[in-house]
Image 1 (tube, rainbow, N blue to C red):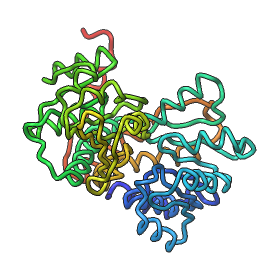
Image 2: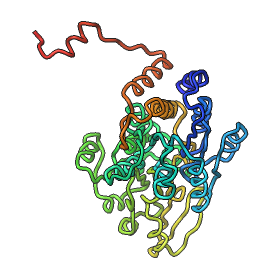
Image 3: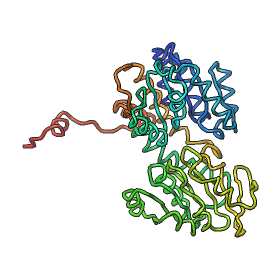
Image 4: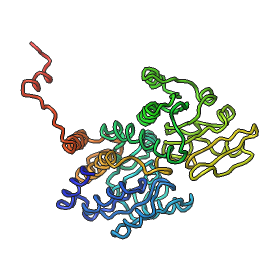
Length: 392
């Protein structure tokens, strides 16, 4: 992760977070651990938890503790334990919050309002978290500025598309050990994550079907060469289903009734609500583990439907998450955005704000440098041309 490494070198010298408490909730695996160490190198007192019960890697969490950081997380924690971990992090009295899905921000607003005055601001990693933040902003209850890291070009164009596209199939393939070629792959949602999942499915020989609620995204999918139909219709022909919407109840009982025997469902959205498990459990006459991270549900009609990783993020709950080269960019934006908030304390309203353009550009240029790629620069004449309305 050379971009983060270069930031770490500067942080060691400048200590931008000296004396500040940073609360972080992101999938706790090796790449996240390095982000935590980079922030700590800048003087931050780190208070860390995971953002999903099945994505925490215990050896990584233990290694961070050995390095003197405060970690509250373990693999496969219960709902009560997960909440306890979040609570411990918030009780630290954070000055900066780095969130993934909005759980920390939600908790401090609802249950720890006395801690809010110390918060300079925060950063949000995911589409789902930004949806929640925008709702808070709309209702007038967001009490500190939050930078929408997910919306940075160097995040969603690469992390969401190429990172999700690769890591989702890594999780599916290592869990099922089945071939993709020749199968019908139904991808629910054609945002940047869905685009990546669909692209990789097609690349492995799958016949891709997209389900959407947005007419423009549906048109994109058609022009990218994919079939588009409603989920209840796609359910009749799908072999593998991947939900990537950020919404709830994307696949439910009406779809289950139509599915093939042996159909496989998984989720790549943040929360485990896209595949409606309570409805599937209610319909099932038998439930058993088919293999690790794969639960089978037998319906009255005799068909077995399979759900990977309890409907949680399949790329992390059944895999290792995005490749390090991808997370190097995303986490560099996190680190630089957190630093920006500290340097500009009090300059922003309590709204969801964009990542400053210079941070996006800085990360992109550093990535090109790592790849040993040089690009052109505008000449003075070209600058003048692009900034002129009179072209005579």
